[in-house]
Length: 86
Image 1: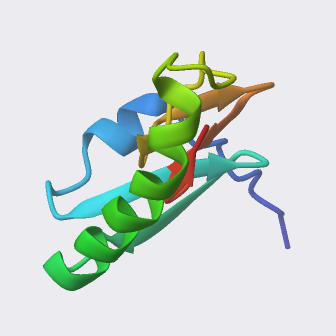
Image 2: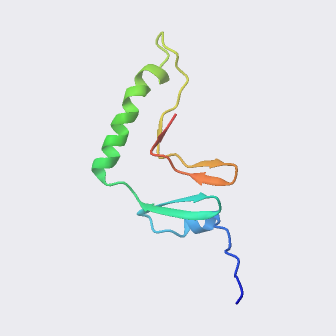
Image 3: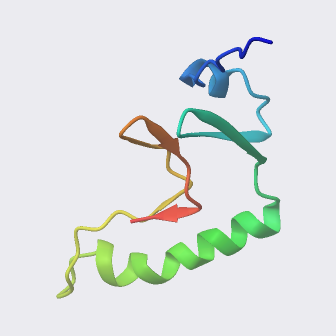
């Protein structure tokens, strides 16, 4: 019996997904899940609204932050899509 080595996932695998799917590559494996439903997307956007006001506008506040919904992050060979990131 032979073991076939599994080919690591590539960015092309993500590009080949249907538009309604989110793809991430974690440890060489393609992980997928459906895009958020509108209520989930609204909730996530609302969560991002709280830190945006004090951290992104420089009105006597720290400023300098970017708060993003579902950014695509490329980190050390992994491709990750968190719900929210700053």
